[in-house]
Image (cartoon, rainbow, N blue to C red; front, side, top):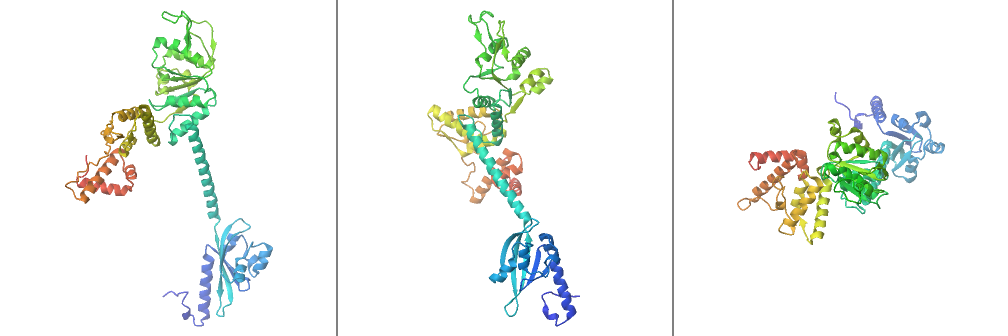
Amino acid sequence: MKSKSLLDYSIINGDEEELRYRVKQLFGILESSHDGIFLTDGEANTIFINKAYEKIAGVKREQILGKNMELLEKKGIISKSSTLMVLKNKKSVTIEQEFKNGKKVLVSSSPIVDEEGNFAMVVTNVRDVTELYELKDELEKKIELTQKYYSELELMRRQIHENSDIIAVDGKMLAVLESAGKVAKVDTTVLLLGETGAGKEVVAKYIHRKSNRADNAFIRVNCGAIPENLIESELFGYEKGAFTGANKEGRLGMFELADKGTIFLDEIGELPLDMQVKLLRVLQEEEIKRVGGTSNIKIDVKVIAATNRNLEEMVAAKQFRADLYYRLNIIPIKIPPLRERYADIEPLILYFLGILNEKYGMNKTISQGALNCLKHYQWPGNVRELRNIIERVSIMCPGDKVMTEDLPMAGINNCETDKTSVPVSNLSMKDAVEKLEASMIESAFRRHGNVRAAARELGIDASTFVRKRQRYEENNLLQK
């Protein structure tokens, strides 16, 4: 049986049953709407509301049906009537409204005009936009919170770089410096952990500068560089005549020199076991005894220790005292290696280059290719290695600009040279472009070792990267 169209009025032809069928269908449609539907006659008397309107407005039909909109507005059942606005202004209106149940709605009312041009009805559509408002409020709060975090981050960056030679823009390093700033305010022992050259001494100096001891001494002791038979006298000093070859007047030790200031015990993992016992006593009692001395000397120092070794493993292997480890490990701060602080690499390069230019009266710059090569290097020696390489290449490069070819890791790291390596003399434009594209794709893949990261660097999606790489591989354009 062919379905009947609701819009085809010609088939009704006065058929009352057909008319009832159509009206029933129409009301079924209105009742199934997720939006509230509100109908009044031309005098603003309510003639229909659907279930959705009851739910959204939190009212019952009997409260509304047959009532005039002016009365409903006066009683406060409806805060303001868009229907009355339509009848007054003779045109459709859209307003925002809030019901007593807290629902926020968007209300649109439009007139239906009869054959004589009079307003026969006003149809109102009510859409619940409470969730949208909640999402908007949530978004505004998140934007406000983001701006707050951004402001705090900028403030922290300014504080970090103020009177400091620390270059840090990477989030991981900023977090380290934030922790360092907090422990600087107290005199508790700090243990700095990190690979060789990661910047442990720089962070130790930062803590000292931020502390209330900043106007007093900062004494660095490399525990691994002092001969074992001299460590005690270096740390604690000695009385005159304490041993053969000693200064006849005696000598102050590092702890006494650091009194009221900070002592930085670098490479603490290299300290011999017998000295670990004596250091533990100093930390606990806050006093030292000079070699050859008989009296204890009170000291007031902030102790910062540092190591690139795994002290927990050393404790398990009985190479480091557990009691000293726990005494040092009150506030550990792990400094991430440079390869994990990608955002810091370029600023550090430019910073070191600027220092060297000023020191040696040079005007060296660096090419983008060389910069990219350095940024993708793994830096096993961390910041110390970076500084040494920048100094070496800035001095040894023949021109005023450091090029990729000047870098010692260019070949190892598969860096692209600043000069194009594509021989174009016997190639068409299309072939030359393909060779260059193939070279860039393979270089990016070698650097990252995975498709997604390589595609992201080149600014293409992963599927395009895979498709192009497979095609160039089939055409033997990839250098293996």
